[in-house]
Image (cartoon, rainbow, N blue to C red; front, side, top):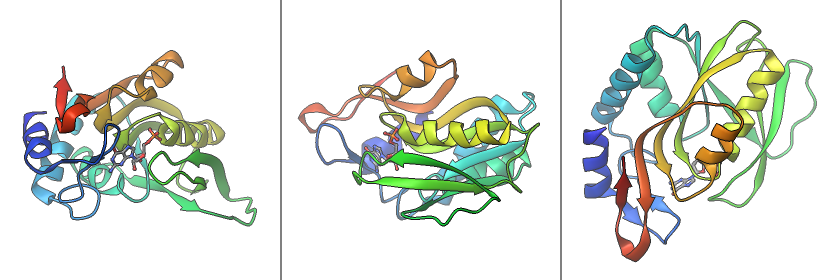
Length: 190
Ligand code: 5GP
């Protein structure tokens, strides 16, 4: 998606060979016009696929997911992260290791909002090693929901997430694929 790639080149900061900072438009401050374009683009791809729900994880997945939901006229559910959770029979739960924060979080969605018969579009801001996506897939499995695809805003293609998810049979669809962050340069692949 060209507008996204232009924004990444203009405002993205390479922190090191593995981490891209995009807090001026996606992960802290949000650019609603860009999110709207992302929403339209993804909605256009999935409009006739029988998706019933958009599922993401707090916090940085929420902005793109909300705009995708808006343009698909579908509800958006975000998994909540908690360090410790008292067992609750209403909650679907799974564990996610965070690549950037290096902590393991329990993530949870109420079984009121994700159910058997749902066909889910999983959305996230970044795909690195695929742990967040796998956690969301696990919640969908617990609910008995199916997964249409994993829709990612920025994929770091030099990390193993895409392969891990594709090897498990999931479709991965990324709006921008970063092939390298070496030498302080952002390089895309098609
Ligand atoms: P994964 O679970 O695929 O290893 O990592 C994805 C999650 O880690 C995303 O939800 C995102 O919040 C965070 N993340 C991974 N890599 C980056 C990065 O380069 N920059 C930022 N800002 N977040 C990242």
